[in-house]
View 1 (spheres, helix red, strand yellow):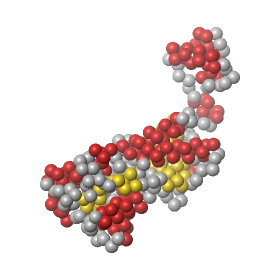
View 2: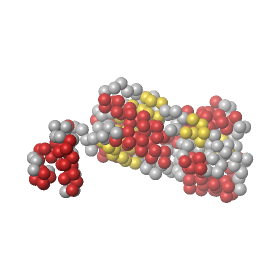
View 3: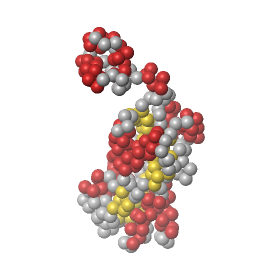
Length: 327
């Protein structure tokens, strides 16, 4: 700051105020100071300011995966919404493990975030205690717990499967199998499986079998590998309900390779309305959960909390059936 001040003939305090966008410094002088700082490669260190104001300017966010297109859409709209308020995000990936989330939360809280946003409602007891003890806003997204830690933005993963099962039953499909990650790994996937089982029971359909695609996260290749391994055994079912669209895409392509007609012999459905479902031939029957909308609403909700505006504890987002040619 002394170098910038010397170059422009102003005081270091003026430089400090200008870089903090203090309006007591004229706009013209602020612009001159920012340009001089850029020319010298100087970046203002906000550590002292954060210590003094107890405001770090960022929100901590955990996602199960950074290469899942739906979570990427949620994060993009969330970060854009926060950026409009001058806030940044500090992101951590849990790889679908609650114990990994606990480690990340400890690390993220050490950076003094102004709020924390967690994906899902399944957490270790230690994680819950950590975020409650910090007394900062907490939002759980992509789920809709009855008693959120602070606030929740999302939907019931179990209830979201009912339109799929009703659609399959209406087209005469009776015997269903759910294909997803191993038990205990993908907890939202487990909720979807339970939702399929509950909807099938409600409609008087036979018990739903579980096809284990391996540890989470499961992808196209996991779906394809399991379908090829099962081969003609897939014909025991009228429909394969997949935990996500990428998994369904893998199953669909494997069925083509081994000569199983979709949807003639077996129907295939996905979840999430990923881009791959729309460009697949045939298009994959899926459920749209408006992933980007979840991030948008979470950002707006957090803004209301910061502004002291009344914010609901639970915001339910919409889901809708998107019929395709695989069912």
